[in-house]
Image 1 (cartoon, rainbow, N blue to C red):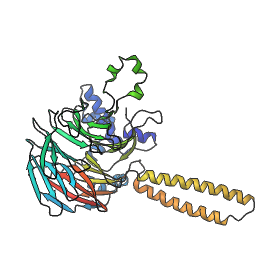
Image 2 (spheres, rainbow, N blue to C red):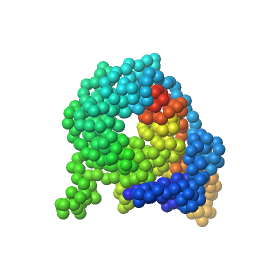
Image 3 (cartoon, rainbow, N blue to C red):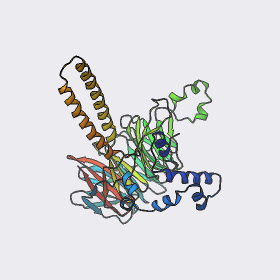
Image 4 (cartoon, rainbow, N blue to C red):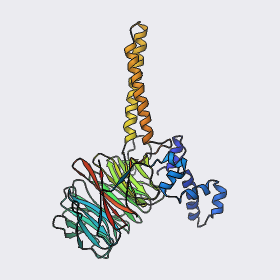
Length: 464
């Protein structure tokens, strides 16, 4: 099972900024499990800081940054980036967005329409192919296919020819609303997830019959293929769990696998389904994305983005939280990666954030290299001093390295606060409501971020 952020901070000797959040909610959840209701009076008796938490939890992120000095230290407001363009045309909330070329992206909305937008002119062409709201969009890496998922009794997931702007196939197998769909990096497979918790995987070219179909969550929210191995799949759901499975291995629950005595002793290496239980302290997961074969990101209703180490390298449990990206003030809905490896997240408060994937890791490695070099030079200096040799050049080199080390340590403070989390490098602002999705494409020398929001607009941000 996974550790909470508070537990991780305690192990590291830090005071968690989420301590006041997690303790009352943990007590409240335990009470609900026992079918009892704990009142606010009880929480005030058990947690003296409850009123402080209750007061500050209802203040917007910008207000908290300006009014609460302690919060400002933990969550400095990143530089603000305004949108380059706003695209209006939908008559209801926009939920899905995907680039289909360097000059065009598509959006899907609750008005049942899919719109293809010309970036330069801002004009759009609307095509209504769904019988209900459109909840998600995804395009293949080769730009040959676009898929849209949504509400409706039949044909909730449709495959498009984006150049012709018409539907070419229905994805068969779902019986309830499709909430997310994604292509593999090599465009060979499509995964789609639905309200009933079912996860389907289809080979591109055969959307009539899935190669994988299982109910993995109470309500499935997202799924993603490993970029280097499309046989590896990660999923997440409303139940707060993250599942990782290998499509090459038949799916067998442990109870069924245990019937075969020859398999039991090999279960750890054979395990076709690994999971991170309660990945976001029991709150719903909004999105999951592979970074590497042994590393993935997840986000959730606990306002956090977490990076998970999927290896068993240190003999620990599967799925160890390696980093926390904190700064959003409400639930995080979706994730996307830029060409430089940065993370873009979209949030229910109407904002997006850009984060350096491993800025602190790079700095830590540089610091370690400097420490090793300084130690080596000190040894050389001591040896030379014993031989009565001139050590002035060595000492000058050591002094210079120590100055550079101090600068790096100061730079580290910009990325990781005393509580151990990673701060955002930029805030993308302009939407007035829930940001449901974002899609990133490198055009020229810059990453272009297209967004979808419940304020009935799409926006374009440019990250240089």
